[in-house]
Image 1 (tube, one colour):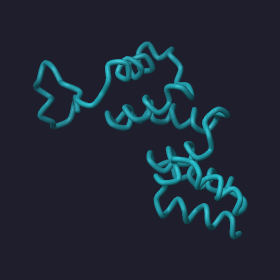
Image 2 (cartoon, rainbow, N blue to C red):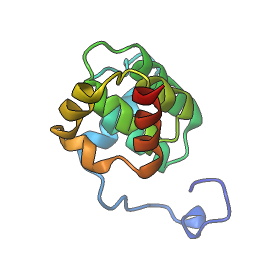
Image 3 (cartoon, rainbow, N blue to C red):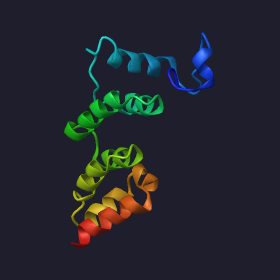
Length: 129
């Protein structure tokens, strides 16, 4: 957006539509001076913006938080792994579903409706193997 061949390249000001002020502050805080932590509380906002603005280092930091967080619920972890194309985590989280009861609990979660066929297939493979 800022350095490639984009129309915004020569503009002095760029309007960031559909991005809230506090969300941008959260992203900027983790970039500079790089001391503000990415946590389970700000992970979704930072990951969404880092992906949107093509910031692979920040995406990787978010992935580490997703991988190590004990507070983020399993269905949300699975959906974020799917959404942001972390296939290793997607497979790992799908394997955490061991039986039909686990899948029934997952179906009661709002994230279930967001899971694509590939992710659902990974879960099915997990409970049938």
